[in-house]
Image 1: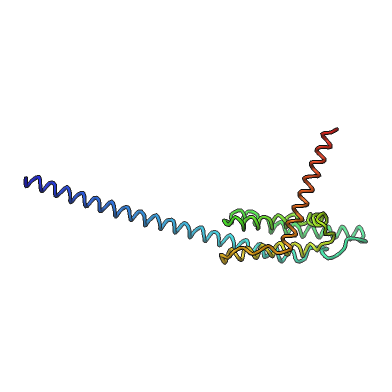
Image 2: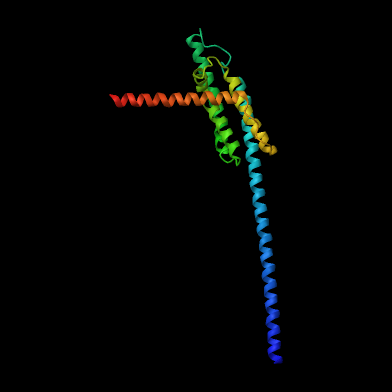
Length: 207
């Protein structure tokens, strides 16, 4: 009986020790898991901060660049062919520089975690990239004469404000009037283009 009691006591002690070790190991695992998640969250935050800083720098360059669109405030009417060619060459050079600035931004925007901000920034880049068509877009939208520099500045300025809000972790700002008008004009232009393409397809199919 004494031997059985000793064995039983030993088994109970061993079981208690094992249970204690298991509990300790479990809590150690939980603490380690939380530490890993915290480290991952910190890495994601640092990556987002770096992405937003790069975007802010790039959009800031765009904002400075669009303040001086070639021929922005000069009418093309009554200009000689030679003057028009010079203006076209200046626009081409200006556009190449703009596209060089925008190219890396288009990729970076895709990694912005805030869905609303990502959509707004992507739209801003789309408008900037298609700046040549905005004149036609505004004409179709009912505004015959626009200042491209002013329109593009409004678009870029709103992107800068959005990035600033993201970096401060504030709510996104309301779209400024210039950005709203550019979006509406651009959507009208795209709709007109789709309708034109549809009419052309129907005409070809009718032959």
